[in-house]
Length: 143
Image 1 (cartoon, rainbow, N blue to C red):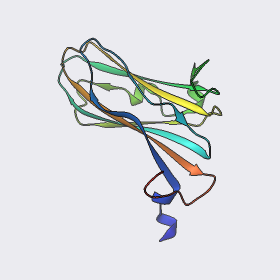
Image 2 (spheres, one colour; image 1 turned 120 degrees about the vertical axis):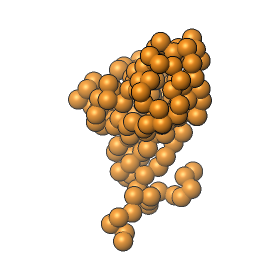
Image 3 (cartoon, rainbow, N blue to C red; image 1 turned 60 degrees about the vertical axis):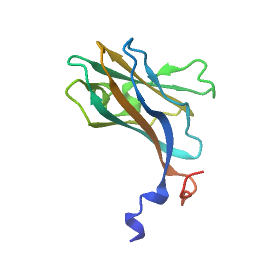
């Protein structure tokens, strides 16, 4: 059974706490994720009810070598698994999930989800799932 163990080979990190978007289209900006000790990162997004009939949410992944994201740059497509467009959401995506992976070489990564045309509630949360640890098993619960 050990070969089917994912739990000890990933480390979840809070990226965006569950929240409702403001009607002024303020972006959801994730925590800065430190990838030290891991070879992969996947952001997992979960949408709740998207009340507005024409709202969209676009995704941007940025990376930096600085812990405070100084000099952050948009991640090039070749360093993503999936696309930012695929990770985006629209008014038709109530209660859906999305994912986007990062395989670049920068240590610090951040996710931004920006609503547009939003006049209602959009509920969103995101987890950063670090994988391929250099030292396994990872602790459960995560520390």
